[in-house]
Length: 506
Image (cartoon, rainbow, N blue to C red):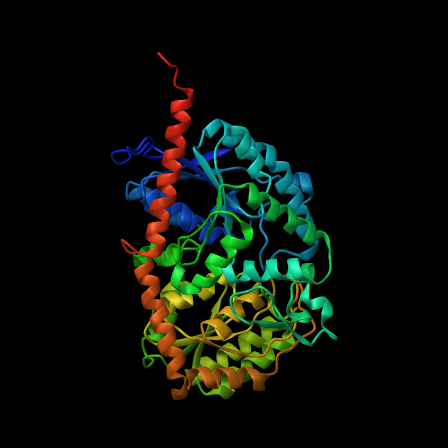
């Protein structure tokens, strides 16, 4: 085990407060790591002593951000625990669930996590935190916290609407009454009328499987936890924020948008989620974007865990060309099942010559790109991190849900907030599988045309209103700022009460 950036321990709190120590334990997946680390950084910004526990390869995703915060005098550090790759038959460095993880390797990563559990528990004991914040995929931590008589707070990487919708399906099973996989049914018990089909539901909700049992365990652990944290803010989904707390009967705090709050400098935005030593792409995309007119460029990205078959890449490429819009498209070398890389290289050469498009290979500095005035909207898989970051930037979206809770998030973007246009995706799939659906170029192009047209002014107005609300939420007196202050106050009170109980009576 290795301790990195162990600085500024024992910082004094404000008058009437105690010095709180915390541990943050992310899951081994980039899309879960980034927002939870942003939350950890927010706690450090508010005077809490923070230790983030993870493995060496996963630390590369955020270590630059932690180093920046530590250099600013904040009490934050990373504690590295070596992943037992050899014990579970994995090559060194394979220790995360992402787009490069071969499907057959996923069970071995879970095995490695199970081996690490006693080590994590020992660290909880040795580091003596006053509370822990752990990802939902570490349900065992609620019992570990109970042994230490400290609060465990669960991190949810989804929206309040998505969790409320999943709860509605679990409770009422409306999909079982549908006559076919494509028949629409209403999600009962929600604040608004939302319709879906069976094929749009995650497989674990359609019929019981191993993952269903895991999600039950996660829900049980949440009910035993002190509360939950969401990367959301009140004006974004207020009805579902209240609804979720009611149906779960637990405390919950929306402290988002965490990407906006924790990354206010360009240095933070560039470092966030970036594992490479230097950004070879940055100068190129930045220069290219700065030659484009305001709100004229489409940003196309499908997150850190998706890859498409060759046939779908061809449809996307044709749709982007046929749309007539300038675009930035984030692609990966392993896209297309062998044929994709060669196709994308040829397409990149073609659009570079026409100056209509720019391809970014691998990781993209999304926060910096989205805030560039040339960006006019984006095509997204509806991953929650990207949805929130798009709202921050005041951008409308073309929605293309793929897996996880994406189809629920699409409902929020398109039907509730009315800041998105759907491509009409019909089928949920697992994150490490291609699936059978290929969305046609005409459907993609039509959705882009609607979103980027002059007629979409109302869409843009609503997106801008939400962007303003996001900025207010993290300011002094804003909903997320107040939630953070209230949670820290409660945690302070718990520690004070505990200290009083253990103080001997004279």
